Length: 393
Image 1 (cartoon, rainbow, N blue to C red):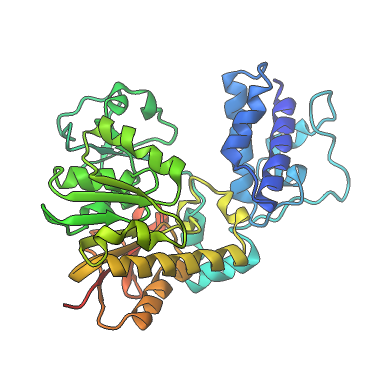
Image 2 (cartoon, rainbow, N blue to C red; image 1 turned 180 degrees about the horizontal axis):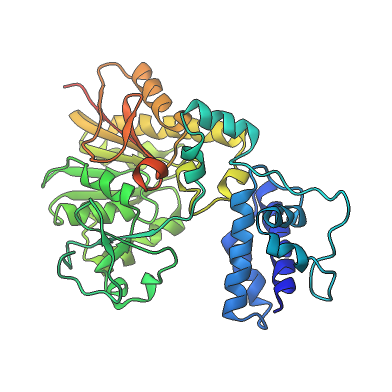
């Protein structure tokens, strides 16, 4: 592909991604993969160059752009070398016309910018949300040791006891150590959330929104398979991925429970009032992970945020029913918005008498409301909020 053809390909992909964002369609990574499956002439360097242009445009444009061309014109205002590539050639984009407008450059849509500012996320804090993230792994203590494990590349040891950091794009999934379950991909903030989980051997622990089980696997490793772990989720496909992951990692998950939305208590009946600890890694906007999925801010709108906060309250209320007196309910979101962090804790305490809240012991992050928040700017991690709710005795 010529440089001009790469720009045109990026424009075409951005058109699809913008349409997907407006209509809650397929995400960018899936669209990019599908695009190149039908264009076998594009080599690996072409695919990488086009992908980089696409994500550069997504990171740069705060509002959802009008179309892919306006998004690439925004990139061209920052990268002057792109301007001559709008050359009108056979496979390239049309020449830039007089009065053509580039897409809006910014952090997020205006309504979301206001939410971020209200949560103290502006200036350098906001800019850091959109920088490319490094790749963090967790050395699985059930199978390996960070000090002695031999990997194809040397990672940077981080403060979490099993964390190593590698440059973005490192293909760890191709390493034998990954296939053998010696390492897992997990952001440093997420690792610290699991490390701070004050569970003890022999306890019953419910991972209420387990997804594919990343945190459940980390807890199994932390506790040496000495606790009873129950992984639950409403997503059958994601929960189905946990069993092979656990087998690969040597992690013991005692039960996996598929939940029917609105009828969760029926499936969880054996554990109601009998659980020592519950982890609620709640569905959220993912605003703390925009470094990895920057199009997330295009796909979020006020109605979706309201739906998510209502769901977070619902899941917290279910978690509260599972806890025995004196037990702990840990609330986590990969979000930097107060709506999905400090405000949810305040709302929970208003609904539930006799509960108290504590901040987890983590050597990163800063206080936010009654919990703790980690951010890319201050902690060089994904954005996370975490708080421990303690049931009255």
